[in-house]
Length: 75
Length: 518
Image (cartoon, rainbow over all chains, first blue to last red; front, side):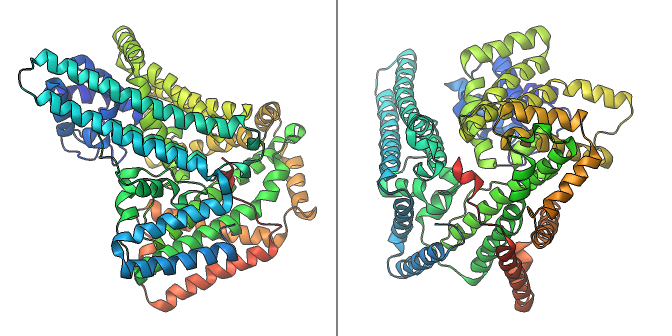
């Protein structure tokens, strides 16, 4: 989880990732940010996030992103 | 059938009555009335071309069920005893491959149909000859099949219901490109119209009509005079004035039309997807595209941008560039290229003409470059002690974004790229304000714009700006109007209706919706 938080801070240092639950719904993260986040997650956690997983539900909060990573790791 | 015509009002009233009666008597089948409304509307305007709609609906309906079934069979197989983890993994991959092949085939079929009808068949020379709403419902069909493939939701088993999703009549003229999961409930569930919803819908329709007929249509003649294929020798001030008016006209036309569609749809209980969010208050071009024609932008993001950047070669490229030049470089390069592709596609979606491609490249390049340079811009701002979150900076950014959009108008309205480029250059090198003002004055004296039409448009613009500022500040224009005392409500209705009637009287002619041609 901390690894993920650090990675997110690298992408955008102006966002309160710990507490925000509406990163996508409120338009805080733009598509370029998501692209960078996906690339970093893939690299750090050695997974491949498919395009079909890029839905608001999976990216609205750190928790959501983390559980998506866990799911993809299991596969 | 225009939106503001006796025929259309008659159509809506008849179906509203049937819809209400069906809701009282057979609430479970009330959706069938919505489907019949959609099919009648389509057939009335496009006749036999309804076969294109049926073909799309049949492919995505059966395809989605098939994809779902393949997935379910795969899961059952993987649960059977005696499989090693490797075998399970292999079986899952094989299952996904099969599903992907079906999804791809259906997407290709639907896009090919759209491209064929829109760009290659001779009927495309005259936009009205297109099957109604094909540019919108084809994309909806594609989003549906990809979402089912991505297991975002279960497929719709009832063909009639899926057909209704694609041919819901208010969306057929100019969108929005509704997402299945967001409208599904409203489309199929029973609905009873109550007074507050009626007022809400009525005001939405009325204000949309003011935007369209008392603003956009009144500005159109002036825009056409200022910006056309012979504008290359006109002073910069004059073409810039035209582009400013066009920015207002286009927003009023498109968002006004969408408001009218949404209002009509609400009368039947269907809340369609949001398409505009005060786009001219955006502080960057990227933000503008998240607030203008939202349903097209989000379609492109979810079904072109993300799938493209997650393909193996592209994600490898991001990785390699990130390693060598830093994470921001990787993102800027991949994002920039993908964004260019997206905007060229958005341009082509508007039409196969060269000027739309230039318009797409213009938008795509500006967004790509501004993302690439954003770290540098931050450093410069820090060096100059400019507060990035200050109010002054915010206003500066809004004005800058608006101007970027205004300049894009040259390549949008003017059919000839060379003329558009000349106008662009003239705006900077040959502004010639005195001559520009004289020519703008001639728009009035020469009879292009009457003083009455101009006054009505100016009044509508003021109303639109007030409306937008209230919304931008998080307030609601509709809420107070639907609950406040009835006399206040009626004053507003009468004022808007009066403005509308006045504008019909002074207008040089009612025009079709710009986006109905796309």
